[in-house]
Length: 306
Image 1 (cartoon, rainbow, N blue to C red):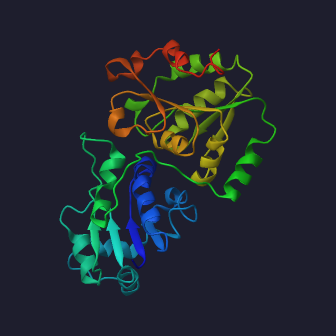
Image 2: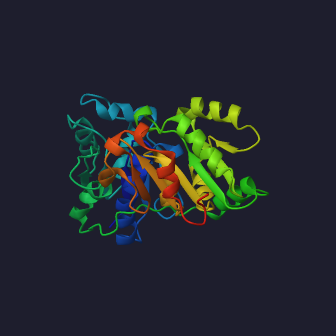
Image 3: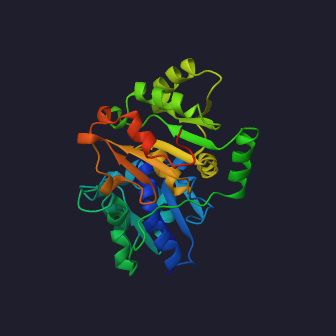
């Protein structure tokens, strides 16, 4: 098979849930060049790291014309698309404008995958279904990342000098409904500080408010890592003894990095959305305010349980 292009938008978790499908492609066609169009800050975990030979930004301005059925298509981008022997698109395209324009610029072999996830089965299995037309069938739903040596070198520099086992926590997510209440996190942190361990607080833009409160309360007691490139963060999480988080992209990253994880689920269904290689604790009634600190502590490994 000639070169393959995968077009995948979405957030961090969406992309990581697609990695098992990309794994099928890489193993099924090891001699092919595989490129991804997506968000660069997310796809960096795949570029040059087993899955993709190159990544191109989905935020490239001429891409917008491909969603207009009467647009004059950018010649360079048209030539780029036409140069692939197989294109697989996960873009939401209900009117098929993007699909029509891909075919108009010369794409002959196009597979369209639906990015919308139902509650029928695990998300990774749904996202891998388009690969069945290439005779690739998913057996392992667990996503994995493969950090580069440079990622681990950057991670080791960040973690240098930290004492004891490292426990990473991510007390936020993209939705407040999926967040364990901050007072519960404070109680858990106080209990974990009794251990001879380093607590890392992982945060991004959507976690700014929670991070600010925790920083003011636990100044000098916690290590805060904010806005790390995902490829480096993945390597950091791979070095951690344990990770605790919510149903979020960072939790998917931690599980894919091989960290031992406990993921707190509220309203979302872990049978569909939880990483397959992680431990899950579902809140009673799907409400995270009903989840006690003691219940979380009871699910820690014996080596960490205070």
